[in-house]
Length: 84
Image (cartoon, rainbow, N blue to C red; front, side, top):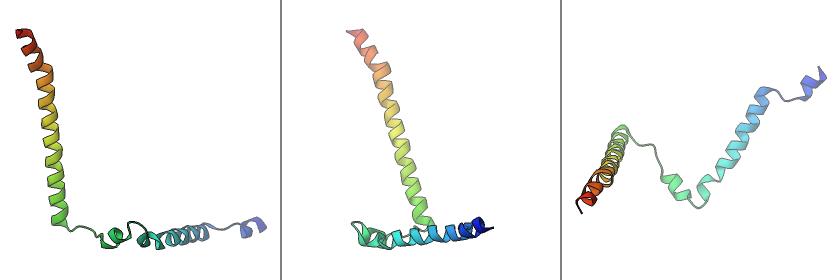
């Protein structure tokens, strides 16, 4: 029974972790990127959807461009080299 009384229980350990996180986060807005962190906000649904659309189009564009490079290098260059 003494051993159980000496050890911290789960709730006390959780509070210790919570306090540790809160102490570390107090200094978050005072450092090099403090202004950015203070100005940051969660985007609304329309802004998030627009960002996702632009990002998706960029990924598709890069994929198409990479495939075209693959076709040129793999198909067109050997065909041109075979003509000369």
